[in-house]
Length: 97
Image (cartoon, rainbow, N blue to C red; front, side):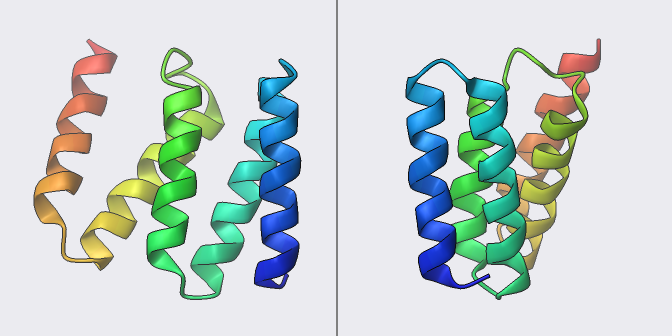
């Protein structure tokens, strides 16, 4: 998908989230985050995955929340942000206990 198509999906996701359809909006955000990563737009992917993680913070058991966390850890490492990756790993471990 093109960046402009991804941006349109982000706007639709925003609209859905504001309208209370968080699950649908989050699915769109995740789709865009995956697309950004495939396009080599790591920082954009981090921003979108962070938004997904924040929206799903209370839903730690969902597959999408786990994917958001896993993708963020991998992207942080890809960007050389080892401290952020480690902090997120520790946060994930503490949520499991």
